[in-house]
Image (cartoon, rainbow, N blue to C red):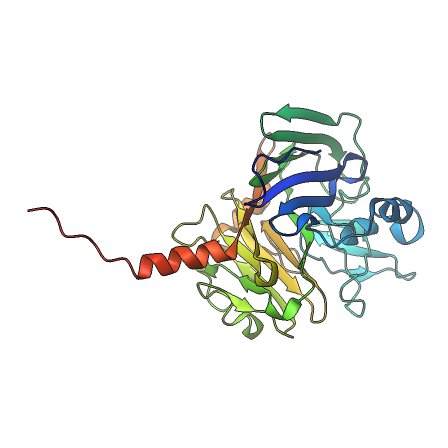
Length: 355
């Protein structure tokens, strides 16, 4: 999906997004016009031809594993890694999902190869749809795909229908996952997205990240200290891997927000949790890598499938006929204009009223 620039180059604009309806609506590319730089890729992902070569559906991609490194994979019906008893051949896990035993494929963490064998990245990635839709909008377009996932080939209890959409406009991209329980019994459902967001300048050390504050005590690890300051904190050489539970929006945010700033090229990107269902955010920025994962999650769980957000634990179970809505917005901004606005506000002197 593409759109033409509206402005004359003085502000950043999204220009294109590539989605893969035949692979769980994986987002393979997001492009934007950045002032002084031109059209720029905002995801750290292989080229489309390389992605096509990786997505074979066999061998190392037999369960859709290539989606995890091909831009941004949508995560349904679970978003956080799940642990279980590993089969003798090391390929599957026996996992207890709310009282029901299921077999899930082992998926290696591409960013932590030495991590224990677990089920990762949900079960939507290898799925295709027969009814993709593209709708033209005044300032862009929308791509939508519906997946009759059922019980995900016997790997998950219950029966689901999942619709994923991406709406492109100049200043924002809206992403939506709707998971509907079309079965006869409650089913556990989490939703998320796992994008590798690029640091376009290639200079990780000076890039800054701002994390939202949280109402749940103790879930910020020491590695995330300082990142929830107003202007965030530079990544430097630090390895960052933290899951925020029940994150809260700042005063002027539309929802819990993670900001990535790349001051070297005056680039900023906000990842905003727009739906009330989003009560967890994982942020991963491995040292030495010029990308960062910002993964907003509805109903995050620990490795045993237990809800991390005790206040909303009951939301994990989706009743028959009900729908879990997950919505995230990407917004572009220029850090220099934020600094200028803050400085202008701090030096403002009110004019005396007329007599």
